[in-house]
Image (tube, rainbow, N blue to C red; front, side):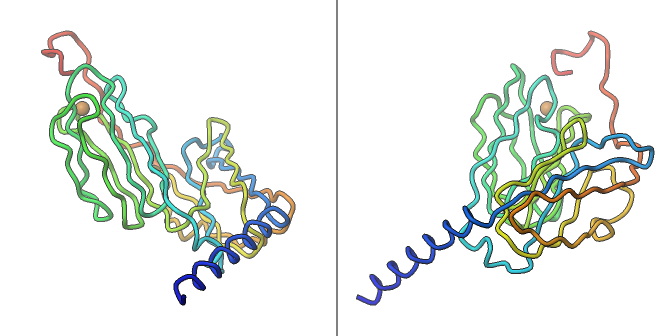
Length: 221
Ligand SMILES: [Cu+2]
């Protein structure tokens, strides 16, 4: 009986959260530019509610990072902590995906198609992806400690929708950002209206290993 009571209580709690979301949820319209005023693509926007109960019911959903034409697609993928990510290989050659990052060390030995098992990202932080065969292949998984996040498109904009009302610490991350994430922290109060937020960041030249050219490559390049 005690168990049933708990279940009923949780259902009631969930129902009231649902209503609260509908009545008092809004969004952050984020813009990221570089020091020259140009839009920054692939910046990750992370909104952490001061009251972490705002997302205690949130569940991670599976995500995908493709390998297409010997590149990781997308280049940057943000996931909620606890997400399983699959790495389908859409090329007709094999890839060998790995990471040495402290937030997730893993290796998917040489494979083609969708044979590699999904990888669980269960520690917040930045995970740098590489391929043992193709040195220029680089990608990033940002494992977020919050389910409220977004990523800027080409024009430097991102929308974080359906944010429960409340106070948030919002910060950003980008692979080529010169300063730390902490320096980008902004505080915002979400009510029932969209809020505009903007950042200007200094970017280092991107770390890229040039892709070899030419035809003498045994089909691997
Ligand atoms: Cu590869």
